[in-house]
Image 1 (cartoon, rainbow, N blue to C red):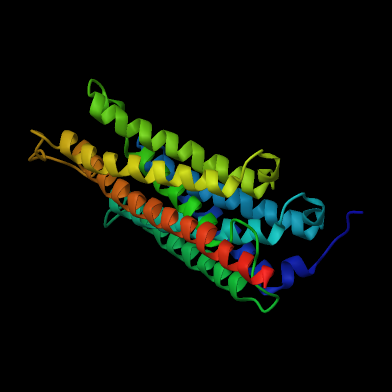
Image 2 (cartoon, helix red, strand yellow):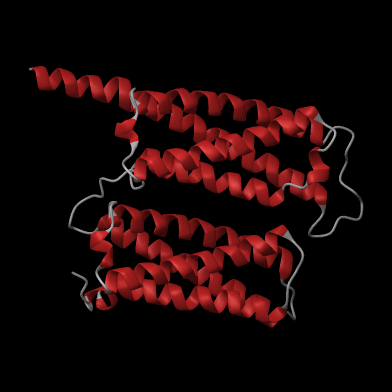
Length: 291
């Protein structure tokens, strides 16, 4: 039966979420009053603030009405993961927006940037509260290290997509391979997150954790090839133009290269940790159980 829980709004985490909803609303409202800018970076920043505002508001409503107790997944795991994702997204928007869209006399843009930084601090505070509260550690997939790395892989892929333009890889099979790597790995990372969060992995006729290890190895190798091929073919004979503004296509190539390197590192660490969990920790637990 659905009721009302005032503690969802009055406890420290609830107050932080209310502040986050207000501040993210302020950010996208300030930017909206300035006007639309035809740029994927502008769209990413607006999406970030709207996304964070919407889901923070949904979380507040579901906890206030106690509907969250009826949901078929680990609620604390979901809210903790969302806070981590929102802090990452707000951090990226807080860096991207002032770099590309503010100036010394752009008061509303400066205000939106400052508020966005405060949003990042608020969400980081929520992460600290949800991860360090005395009720115990979260045991869900999204709050575990493999789940966090899967979210990071998807997040960095989104930043890559934000910087990609069709003209960058059209006519080049090598660069098209890199784009295919970014897309395929992103899709499978999202699938793994959804299957693990929805507790659907038990329906597989084979061990899902070993399947994830195989995927992680393939993804890490594919990203390594993209990390080498993308800068090799995108910058070959392509020097930075003498007149290159803040939204220069050449700078976007650099962003894609940098994010591909970071994601390669994340996939490599994810692969190593997955192998360690399955073949070392699991075998140790099995031996201890037999004894």
